[in-house]
Length: 117
Image (cartoon, rainbow, N blue to C red; front, top):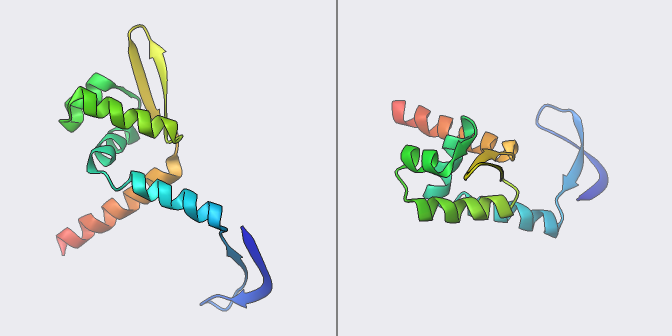
């Protein structure tokens, strides 16, 4: 993160620091948004917002095939968005990147409002 030593004033007249993300942070942010570019992953994440689920539950609630759900969960786990625990023969997945889902929910709310108008 790069901090510009010059203070600036925001729209309300308050003094703020000019903090700009560095290239690495922009890359990380772009990768997060790439993950959201796949509707199947958004379906999975939306279900996981309501709590921990196993692959079978995710398949039933999203209408996706098991192989597809498993592939997306591997990617989401590798990028630190979800985690899983094993119980017997099942793996239970849960969302751990709440900031990402907060963005998704805000967008969903905005889209719902647009549909109503």
